[in-house]
Length: 271
Image (cartoon, rainbow, N blue to C red; front, side, top):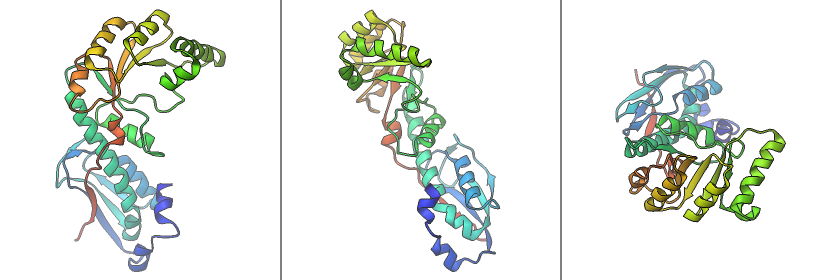
């Protein structure tokens, strides 16, 4: 899909001035410090454009990179490598940007024991790539989509009639359909937390838009009976405070939806 939207009925820039028999080399040049991500994706894109293009790797996903590093060299038909160039860079720059940002967030909570999670706030059709980049950066994935976990958020609870009704209906649904999915419920107050504890039937309790002080109290109420997660309004300035509350997980949407792409380029090697 990404190649199709870029190429259309042909890469006329390359077709018009590069003969089909011209062979060459292009290097992936790092222009900014960060964490590399997307090497396998780049190789597959090149293969799909022309399977005679080869890749010599010098760095792999997860490598700490600096300006001037060369991640890999592509060799093959110059015309086809130019056709693949922008799609390769679009994937790698965004994925490396996410991995770099995620790594910085992970470093902020180092030593606290908390696990950093992403969210479903991803670019349409890019979710698997972006969530992979989160893992390369050192964090973990929350659910991949709507299908692999039950997440009872405020709107679900309001439509269901109450937090207890939402939990009961979710468990009844799983039993009826023979599904084995974990259930997480969002709480909006400490009273909600107490109600969930009294009712049961979940695996994880999310503290949504709680202050660190409220989360400390919530963690005490839960007392390790269920997993706990902090979410909502957490920034890099407040992340460490939330991590120090004793909560098990912190989900940060900014890992995938407020990032800057890393500066990379594909440059012709002049012999």
